[in-house]
Image (cartoon, rainbow, N blue to C red; front, side):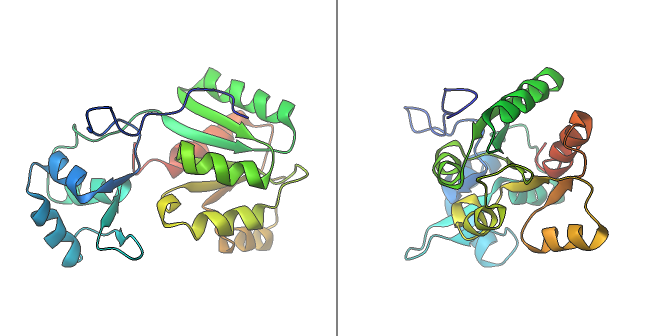
Length: 208
């Protein structure tokens, strides 16, 4: 179930890269940087451009935020990067709450948002939607945040997703424990839309 029904385009019919991708192939990086694919492979093998290999193959994948870091370090123009709207996946056991949050976020900013209500939907939609941010309401029922974090962090194709928890006035020790479980950030006031938006923008600042 999604707040928006349309799926993002990850690749055009002509094989060219579309906006919104957050993991790139060496061929795509080569086109962006205007170099040969073998040059990108050398950057990767020397550790200059960080990424990971697809298990069981020699294919390499470069996270978009790592490519931006590399390009800025070497004074390369980043105008050709496939950056589109920030994609947000809201995980909340209450459809009414998640819909309201999606509406408020879109009132304040320009996002592409989907909502899910349980762990199974989260994994299935995340694979297709490839969100930049996973926003999990820890106050809702039918959600196992720990399992979601573990599943996202163990999937190499989803490594660049930023996971933000919506909580309610955590203590310092509780907040630290949350970050140790794999969350990138948390919002202490579920009613404060400005705080939620700031957390989203801070988490994606390296990309945008």
